[in-house]
Length: 465
Image 1 (cartoon, helix red, strand yellow):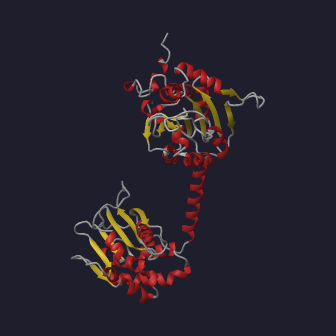
Image 2: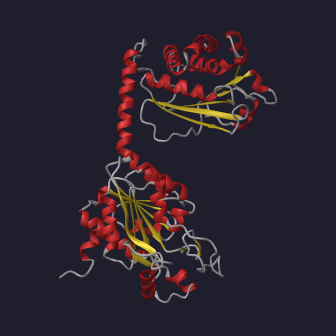
Image 3: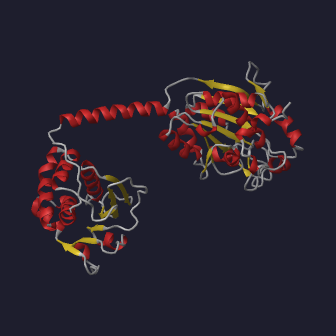
């Protein structure tokens, strides 16, 4: 006869035992409920990922014999959403404390409920911030003491299960570490549920919550949980005054997010294929000529209103159409007009492992502020500077100072300076063909804007050549 729990060892990292939790903490019971649920569902651990936040509950992923993510405070659901969207085939569990889920992470919590993405959120609710010293949490019951409310909390607590129901979670249940048979049952139902599932577990913290509120030892605190709750069944308001209902609150099946997202991607791909079939553009041949450096990093910089972001988009579009691997990122301040901004593109003949431009090979500066703010250039790289950007700045040796704005005005409008700069860059470096840039203009711009920008591209190309 195996000892109790012997059959669950395969789900745990025994070498990390015993856990970090205080003696008598209910979190170990919740973890046992999780592994019992996984055992009942016969889940393969190489298909399970457990995502944890910050706090006592966030330590749970350390002990599961599965892939794990230890994330930032309140952001566990954000990380889990990205993971599930990228790999909808995985079983993704999220372990959070009540503070992690309902305080700093409250916004992520309600929107995860709203989306109905197929995640299982297990909220360990002990009514306190246990790891950081027993401060008041959003679930601390009114009148209860904490290290920050020594005279008792005067705030009404969040009802996490009611919040989840109101926000749209399609499975919601609440149980306690006292109700040990219901605990794995609800978690197993939540994992099997095809949508966003929330299991709130009332768990004891004898070190802080129990001690500060004179609730006795851990076993006595289990009785406190029993007396604090009642099962969902017809009862009068007077009978349940001061108690929390436990049980299964909701179990609805409705469209799940990642499946709807996959369908949306299929429709978008079909629409794009239909649009490509209807375009007048001939498909561009793949460019076999080598880049000056692989990968090659480009930074456009200027001020808001100069089309710096669009310049990066057009370069990425054109290079991608010729078979390059491309990444485009952008950064700008809160101003729609004015303020320094930048747009960065990485081009490569192979997969790009990291999207950030660290030391650009080519820099375009269209404004004095951008020239001062966005410094740095790889040795041997080129910097193309609009002549007005030199006001108050001294060009470095090797800078290519060009009348980009004046060229745009001559082409028909100063607002086309971004396309003039793009044409000049392509003319100097040969990163993309002029044909690819012209095709990108047709794809990205409204028809009435094409003539001006086509003239600007030709003028910039000429200046660069």
